[in-house]
Every structure is written in C-alpha cells, then in structure tokens.
Amino acid sequence: QVQLVESGGGLVQAGDSLRLSCAASGRTFSSYNMGWFRQGPGKEREFVAAISWIAGNTYYADSVKGRFTISRDNAKNTVYLQMNSLKPEDTAVYYCGRQLPHYSGTRTASDYYAYWGQGTQVTVSS
Image (cartoon, rainbow, N blue to C red; front, side):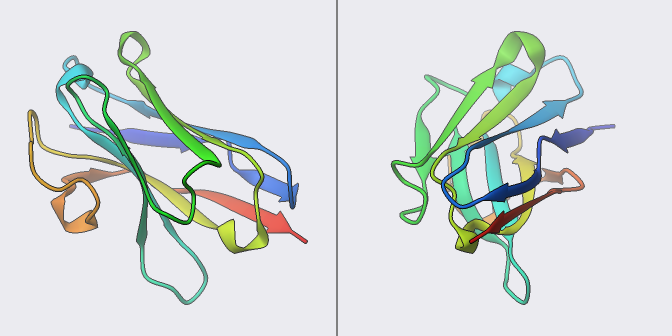
C-alpha cells in the first residue's frame, strides 16, 4: 500500500520561509514523478510544483516560480518543497501526490496523480 505523509506546515508571517516534506513508502521511489498541489479556502486544488523521475526535471506554477523550489532525495524516499517569500495568498492545505511509475504525460493536473497524502496546512499572515 502506498503511503505519502506530508509534514512541515505551520503558521508564518508574510515574507517567511517554510520547507514541506513528503515521505513516501515503497522501494522504487525514484521511478515516480512527484508533485505538490494546494487547496485554499473555497478554491479547487491547484498545481504548485512537480519533479520528474528521470533527470529530476522541475515544473512550477507561475504563481510560485522564483519563490518555491521542489527537490527530491531518492535515498530517503522524500520530496521537498522549499517555500520562500511566502504571501498570504499561499495559505492553503498542501498535498503531495505521486504518479504511476515511469509516467511521461502531464505533471500539472491532479487527475494524473494516482496517490495523495493527507495534506499539511500552511497559513501565511499579513
């Protein structure tokens, strides 16, 4: 059974930084694209960032480009989201998702992710 466990959320002030972690179960973590999505109050889940299983290519939503960095440590089965210069509009529940192995299609749509974590709350005060 696949498990994804997010951590690192919290309450911060605008301009602060946070690093989210997502620990995944399983032995072939390096074979999966991983992504971060978020869902703010009254909003639909939206793409934040993704990192591919091969070459570690990264993808970002325009709203976070230059402020957020996604990375992965395959030895630790963990993907990270470093969030800098946080803004109140970044307030949301952040979810980690995993695609099917060796998937080469879109990485920015939640429908193409097979597994999800339970989410971690990030609140940014002004």
